[in-house]
Length: 375
Ligand SMILES: Cc1ncc(COP(=O)(O)O)c(C=O)c1O
Image (cartoon, rainbow, N blue to C red):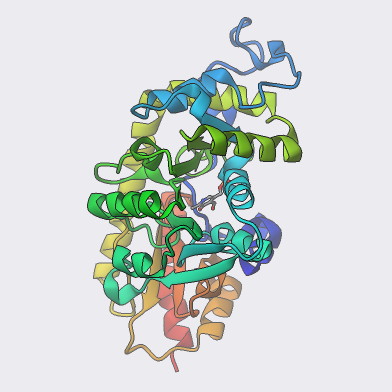
């Protein structure tokens, strides 16, 4: 997939000055978190003391408790910890779908949500979102595609990557009803839910046992290197299948990663507000930049740290030259549209990962590269 081949970690972080292509908040060090887990800090809880045996196959109980505590009606045993949300999405698709099974997936989307059903050989119907509709999902379009008793999976992401838009509550309820009435599983990739700028939607899995909610430590907490995510599922049989899928891939998660993630989530009320405040300040910077120019436009994200910017329709630009000049001439990197199966007049702008100075420099670079590449 282009998003993997061209990712900044594969390209080399040292080749980019202003990295506006990332989809999380800034990566954190263990010492940034103030957990006292570092060597020698507190003997009884230091990581040195951790027994590195195989762990609970569902995942660290403290971590599962912390996930469940934040969601009404969810028990720790409804939570399956996985190596990142990516593995939870993979386990869900491979547990629910067989070759030829019908699935409805929204696009644009996080690539795995499209690629895994395709790799399985599912019979895929794609619902394309569009800028001109404000990237809003019209649930009626999904409903028209769903075949009662036949569709196995309905898959959406909210808050959305790469647009940062949100379903409204009525749309989420309508999707839940659709899954329940048709017998499909509703997969909601909620990896950005903790970064919602207004009131977060309920975790989908709290609304129905037909819904699976997926999230992780990567985006909101800046800890993608922990490789800790989870799927929440209240349907016992489905949850058992997800566990079996995980056991066949990894047996259990990394004890050390899950111990750290559990401590972070227990401390979420101390850690998250500062992150959210920073993210909203960054969003302000992008908003101000967009208001002061007439080359680019976006639908302002309602959650997360990414938005899908596009060249205004009246701007005549050589996009290949734009991306080339942007990186080679200005050291600035964004996620081009083809990463998300849309044309390269769109790009994903990540505003939560770079420093404020890098973000400001990167935005100026975008304006300059666009001027250089105008035909
Ligand atoms: C919407 C979404 N879901 C899932 C993932 C996977 O994240 P991770 O496996 O690091 O938790 C990403 C990463 O970009 C994402 O944007």
